[in-house]
Each structure stands twice: as structure tokens, then as C-alpha cells.
Image (cartoon, rainbow, N blue to C red):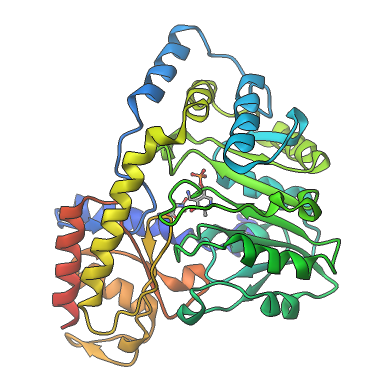
Length: 394
Ligand code: PMP
Ligand code: GLU
């Protein structure tokens, strides 16, 4: 009998976290690695949020929390959904979890049966595929390329649907492409789904505020999609709170109750101090974190300008999030400094070894022609990193 389960043996390690760990390890060996692999704001959590956490400790918040979150936090989430998205949810429709990642894991665990298909427009966020597989679901990748700004069209969705299709998972703004689905584009997808009333949508909106073009649209805003959409969001990105581990969903009540039940057996409620801090974060106007978004936009433009100057890097213009996802297939089959580059993984490893810059291979996101570069790093680091990349490939 094997020590470890087939479940874990069949799972891939998260490529984003693996690359971050590798960068940390090399740094520990004294190498001057610039980490552009992790999607983690380099800003500090805003002081007004930190103060709320300190206050919570001093006020004696230390006990187990309600499994689905403090009522005050769920009310703040309801207010946020109304204020920012025009979405109306009630208390039993909200579940607070330990990061949006746990929200996604809950959804898969409570909704998938063996053999259910989940459509993943590529490129998708790295963990979607393994969370689906962990729950015996079958990821169905819908390929796209830079030519369509990495977005799935209605016709592609239609073609991917089978009698086994249970859900579609996507993020907008998208990690890793930075693409944003407009309201019209979402409507076109919804029109296809209107012919398939049993298919549910997981709309991951964690990058909602990191939007450089304005006009965030949510699938649940369409009346005919509201009862079939689970809206996932969290505070890691816009509020620079990755380590605090708070995410949440607004969902049809049956699904929310099931997530609550699931969480009650595996983790219980989210950390009490973090939850109190998030009440303050969500009740604040999003304008309080606009300074970070303004800076991300400057960095996006900087990265695009610098990459455009390197042969063989083809980029779209990301409209949100903090990643660029250049197509680097130009280098496949070429030999750089004696090393043959066969694919994006080779290329990403080459950049780590030769340029001392950590990126993530596009394979992890379902697109083998690209690499992901996170620009949640200082302008100085970005300039130095891309200078090194340019030298390494020239
Ligand atoms: N969805 C997407 C698209 C992400 O990029 C991430 C990365 N953090 C998550 C979900 C998970 O976020 P959290 O930190 O809230 O678990
Ligand atoms: N979501 C971030 C990323 O894509 C954080 C890492 C992770 O949770 O996988 O880099």
C-alpha cells in the first residue's frame, strides 16, 4: 500500500509557489534573484487596515469565528457587492473563507461529481485545473491566443459544451493575461449559456479593482445568470493583504450553505483578527487604495515599453491585474548560450539561471507559448530585471 494517496501523487505543485520557493532558495545561496514570479503586491497593507487588526486584538477577538464569517463582515461584503457591482446578496448567500483559493476549493468540493467537466478558458489561473482534478472533475481547456487578447469567444464556449459540462471558471481581470471581459463579451457568453440552464459559472473577480480601463462587469449582473453564478472575490490583491488570507463568495444560497458545511469540517471559520480588519477594508471607499492601482499602471506601461524592445517577446496590452503574459515561442528550437530552448518551461528556467529573474512558465496556465511576468515589483527591479532578460536572450 503506498504511503501517499493517488490524489496527492496525481496533483501538480503550484507553479507560482514553486517558482517563488526556488527564487527564495537561490537568494539564500547568495544569488541576486529578482522575483517576478509571484502575484503579490509589494505594497504594505494600508495603515487604516492594520490599525483595525490591532484594535481587534486589543478588543479581545480570539475565539473561533462563525464558520461562514462574522455577521458584520458578511454585511460589509453585501454592502461592497451592492456598491461596487450592483449585486444584491443576502446573509446566507455569503461565505468568508481562508483566501479566494479556499473559496474555489470549496466550490469544487461541493459541486463536482466524478467525470463532471469544467470549462477553463486558457490561460487560466494556475490552481483552477488542479482544484478541479482533486475533486474528480475534468478540466476542459479552451485555447486562445494573443490574437484574441486571450479571451474565449461565444463560439468557442458553445463548441466546448457537452452533456457533462457542469461549470465554467474564469477570472476577469485575468490572471495571467490581464485581459478584461467587457459587459458585451460576458453577455455573449451568457447568451450561449442561456441554452444550457444547468451550467454554473465561477466568476473570479479578485483583480476587480486592479483595472486600468474602468468598467468592471460581473456575470451575476445579468438577471438570467444571477442564480447560476458564484462570484468569488477577496482582499489579497487590491488591499495588499495576501498573507491575511481572506476571500469570500456571493452565491446561490444552496451552494453557499454547502460551502459553509464543507468548511465546518475541514478548517472552521477564517482567522478572527483578519476578518475584523477586512470589515474596515471593505467598508472603506475603493479610492483609498487607488494609489496602488495608479502605480501598477505606471509599471504596466514600463514593462510593456521595455519588453517591446526585446526581439521575440509578443505581448498584448493587459487591461488589469499585474501580469504580462508574453508569447515567447520565437525562441523555441533556438540555442541560447549553449542551452536549447524547447518550450516555455525551458525559457523560464533559462531566465532564472542566466538572468537571475524568476518568471512562471505559461504551461502552468494552460498556454505553452507564453511566460508570466508579474510587475508587482518596484520600478527599479522591473528595469533591472528586463535589462538582464534582454542581455540573456541577445
Ligand atoms: N484567483 C486568482 C485569479 C488569483 O490570482 C489568486 C491568487 N492569489 C487567487 C484566486 C487566490 O487568492 P487568495 O490569496 O485570496 O487565496
Ligand atoms: N495568485 C498569485 C499568483 O498567481 C499567488 C500565488 C498563488 O496563490 O498561487 O502568483
